[in-house]
Image (cartoon, rainbow, N blue to C red; front, side):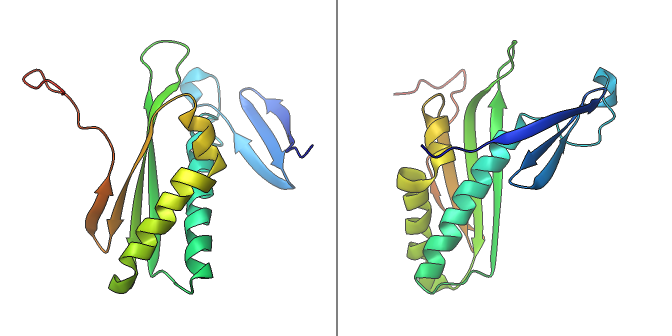
Length: 157
């Protein structure tokens, strides 16, 4: 059975260093809770893993089609619960891609493939919470599946 293994060592106070396939990752807490703020807190690494997983999928799919991008950024927003344990209750991915206008459909297809068939991190998260996304291509939103927020004067149908 294939597996991944991460080794983590306590470095004192609130700092932990993890070794991931030979790469070092520092985690720490802000000073207000006893850390020294030498690295990010652990929870956002889930969002980092998601952005890297789907981002690598998209680039890989497009390269297989001979498509090179001019720019590609992702923002991943995790909604936090209000009570302990503080967990993500929903995640939204914003893809911002710049490229040849003729490649808009290929970009859309690559993102859909990642989100619906290939991104393992997204699939794991979808088992416990909604994962939605939007796509901006050359500055124009071309897709958004995030549910609209209900206001006091609206009733969702």
